[in-house]
Length: 333
Image (tube, rainbow, N blue to C red; front, side, top):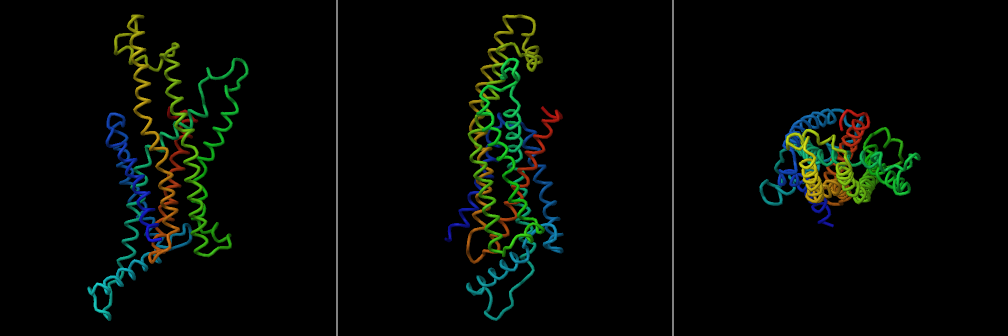
């Protein structure tokens, strides 16, 4: 199918574009620091990946399996054949060589930088939602029992979210040569296993979307409920700036305005949260489909899909796991 590879690249590209669009278009909903950090991450990831791929090119297959030379040779052969077919080169003329490897490294580095920058805010928000979902407020517990209301639903939520968090790992592990050497597989079957691992990660992300959206809505409701029933410590400075820290009447009016703002922010942010929860799955699907594309540039597609897909999975897991750990330890709120 000649449309498989373009569709796969379009899927991943559209996901990154949608994530960037949600941050750039809705500036009132996105702190400026978030955009600056994303740009800094892109600038940092590009040289790191480029240097790593340069080292891999000199010592391929020892710590990560990236078939750079196969992809570079395929690109050079393809370009030479097309140039001769279009009469740019004589049939017996020698085509230029050596440009394939730098091109592959540069495009892979740019792709990874784009994925890292576009998914950073999404990962941090999903990690925050994960933490709030698994650590509900104390007033949601039955008095004296310590059992959460709706315990069965909580067990299901925990299972869905834990699978969501761990699902990218198989795609990362299948890119490590020692593990691949232990499997009785050839190049084609290895690519199929990696594509299936990416598909599994994508399905796990999509299955968790309703849970993440509900947890995000619950978090806003928790804030509203706590403020309504006296939990105003978080908004003490805001109430003071509004001149409502001493006057009971003004305090009630200010709390009502804050509660309306909380509900309005939930309504306005719901679409952004939905995009951030769904887009990583499209990236994983696009990378997996690109690895499965059987065409003249099959080696190139397998290299790009496998490397970018495994990088996206590793980045998504590490950022989420790191943010969750920081929240569990109390280093960030």
